[in-house]
Length: 254
Length: 254
Image 1 (cartoon, chains in turn yellow, blue):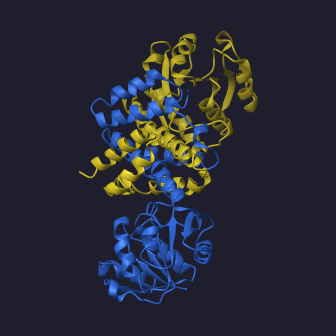
Image 2: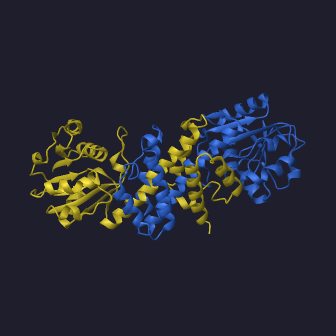
Image 3: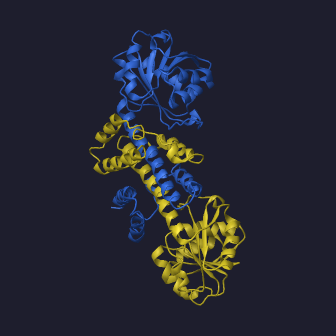
């Protein structure tokens, strides 16, 4: 299968490496920034282009992996291709593609990607969708080559998943950052709290989080809650977050 | 060293097993509930008692590992012992002990403990404090036997650490629970999101969280933020949390 990748960000990079590692033929990488296109293309021995008019018209699969608001423009530039065109977005409807091209699909990896941090694609859930059964089969066959967890999900469920991912990933990471803010203001190193973060995540690998909640709020320990709130007097933003989340934990007790 | 353990909860249980595994002699377990005392005492071949008057008076170390508001009563019952008396609380001042007993200290493991989930004590940061140097040395010698990360911290820094731990552990776990609430209302299994949770925590083992933040808020992607907020219209509590945390992430961009 000849694949063209449109995009050169974190998702595009990790996906390209995973496809290449499984022997897929990524023939071309497009980015409006030629340097970025080359950086990624060189990694996987593909051609780099920065002009949508130069995109090969006879590939089997076009993967659009760019910011959500740039998907539509790229899709429209592919209106004459006969291959399957997919995007990798959690929130974008498949219709944005199917109104522009014949064969449309979604190939959404549910993971957080950062430059310089390798991830094993095998353990990344892949959510796929297509506008007809034969294309879904093609996508499924590709997905199961690179991931052990493949889910066929409609757009509504994919959007729910993306929302849940913000709660399970983006918000916890920000709370780690707030913890580090508190620590560093008191000359304490983030290192001291890393084992706690690792164990907190590890605990929900075999349990549901609502069954393993710990801390002062779930104990309704008002004395500790009040001490903590008063320690945050000079950081009203953190005090507000502390109050909001503690109230939410206490609601689960009712 | 002969050790008496006062308490039979999660911290007491994990600590008792770690001490026993390193050959320490835990001779007695006290709990106001004799069954609870026996459950733990049987695990480590100790005596179980449910009456503070029966607590041995000639041990070397007394570890009080109970709810914060029960520490003082137990400390007062130990006023005649000559051994070192410590508590395991993150928020309680050492003075609550030193006003009751001669030799006082703190032995605070910075970790989240749940029944039925084993943890390796070696990787748990232990924060210690004592009201004199010789007792601090004794505590340090014990601590380094069971943990590779031992910190000598005054009470103020320990309280800061405990506050940071709420942000790094209790709040993220609650956010996992809210993610599961969103998923289960849409017939999606928590399993699908576990790899994302694991990777989010793993990413900050070698990075600072503020350097690896992802998601719509840090991209200032108002379109996705608004879509997510509208999906939460029927869950105003979650909508409020989404808004509060997204606003806080956006503040870091300024």
